[in-house]
Length: 77
Image (cartoon, rainbow, N blue to C red; front, side, top):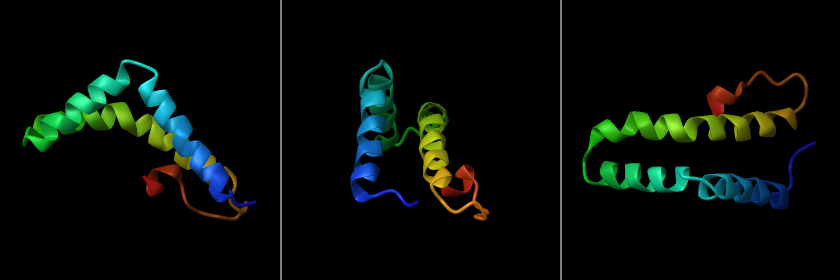
């Protein structure tokens, strides 16, 4: 069963809530600001903070796909 647009929007809200409900929000904002200023050393820490949640969301989407699909969450990220 495919997720509806409402389900997808809810997933985005959950992602935003998780990031905003902890110290992570400040660190993500800070790391993004550093990247905008040209500090390439901020990329690795940013990916380390955001990647696990993106992976979790991708895995949730794929669980809704047909059993024979061949994609892995990592491919979607």
